[in-house]
Image 1 (cartoon, rainbow, N blue to C red):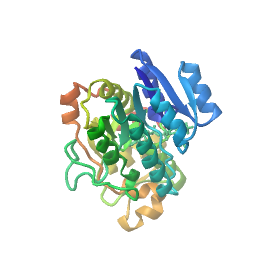
Image 2 (image 1 turned 90 degrees about the vertical axis):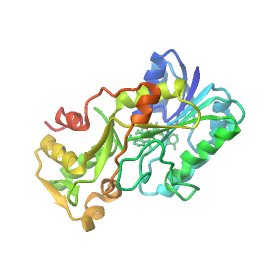
Image 3 (image 1 turned 45 degrees about the vertical axis):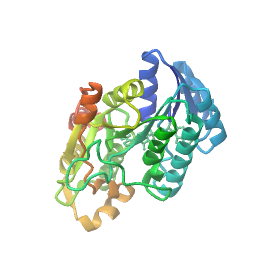
Image 4 (image 1 turned 90 degrees about the horizontal axis):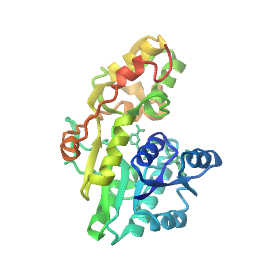
Length: 298
Ligand SMILES: NC(=O)c1ccc[n+]([C@@H]2O[C@H](COP(=O)([O-])OP(=O)(O)OC[C@H]3O[C@@H](n4cnc5c(N)ncnc54)[C@H](OP(=O)(O)O)[C@@H]3O)[C@@H](O)[C@H]2O)c1
């Protein structure tokens, strides 16, 4: 298939591109900078220059694709409303361009706020609707296109898609620990984060693209929930730092923008996804990655 990938130069996207190329697909990758364009071209990707806000360009790229994988996100943590608005506009543009085609449209989502007091499952619908909600309510918006002839598949990534060279949440937590001289965890550290190794996550994206039924919500989750205290302990071991509880009232000040996430329980299962697609995660666990130096340290 000729697959248009947004976020093709990102942490997940760059590995998805490799997986799709290895699977014999033709990839068109969105790139907003010379560096990203060059990295994609070197791999044999057909580069589509443009920004997420260039909706005409996205529409044109989608019109020439047989499938779309949407992984770009501005991730402007100082202005989440702008990221959410861009995400919603991009998803609407992609959906509109695919109406009536039956073509696969796989988009990234997350596992936050799906369930209270238990791990989230694929059956839990996203509570986020409308432009003012997290991620601009993009999962529900994309799923609305199923009734209009779009083969939408949402891949909900665990809050950490980990591995060597990850620059996401765990790298940010490690950076804060080094800066503050302490690997902190919120409160008693029993709130949990689901986790998945990048290699497993990208295999799921490729499988989902070719095999998941329309309206599927897939969970890219290998570990149901790693207690935040264990994450902090592994960061402490990696960088030889003391480990300490951070008072729940102080979490936002201590951790900054990531405090809201690190203070949440973001556990999720992937039993239904594994059963549906025969996907079995095999990569290292988050703590194994941290202990092996995937985030630096010893
Ligand atoms: N990584 C995780 O643990 C995780 C967990 C849950 C959900 N997700 C979601 O999964 C998706 C992929 O995440 P990721 O970790 O791969 O993110 P990432 O490494 O930050 O990559 C973001 C991608 O979006 C592109 N991008 C950013 N702003 C853009 C703009 N204005 N115009 C065009 N492209 C733009 C980036 O291009 P440049 O290379 O040019 O910067 C990059 O290719 C995102 O939707 C993310 O929210 C990720």
